[in-house]
Image (cartoon, rainbow, N blue to C red):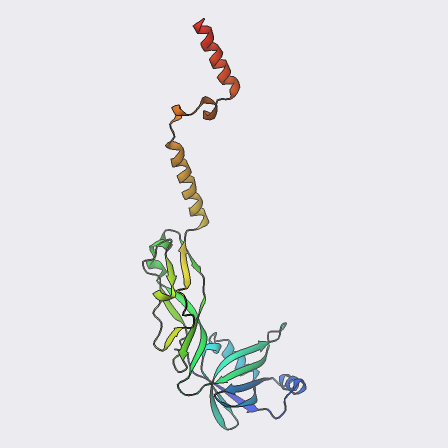
Length: 235
């Protein structure tokens, strides 16, 4: 389950581009807290503290307790805007979580027990179709990762959402189809070898006596010479 993070903030008295630029020069990042049937609150947070949380890799799937204006707000990060050149965070949107609320999050998928998959031992390749799953989760039970066991998988097998046991309090946000998460496929080299083997087996099944001489590799001149010799013997 995702860790609960804490982030200190200060309320913003002024809004607008000029005020936001001034905050960024001071090492602060403008942000807003909205939702939960309450008025939005404009705030700013320390850039270094925000970057540290972003570097965990699961900031967007974590409950963040934002301390601002003498009150603690239970939130979920919904969007972070980054500078197109420097990748510095420019703005953050926090969604206020009400008690017992359900949220939609993208949770990364992690595969385990590769050594127990016969198809991988034979040289197969795991083709990951979805690296993240869109889940509807209890805000208090947001998982860090979804673990998928590869034990027993053979080349040609597929993993669908119906094959995955989701944590309690979570369900797929896509409920109209049994979508594919990953497949175990043969590498291109193995496919080429199989094709060559099938072609060779097909040639062996052909009766050489039933094939005209010209198709067995004898050119037309050689065939004509053989016929002429046969006629001379007959005379």
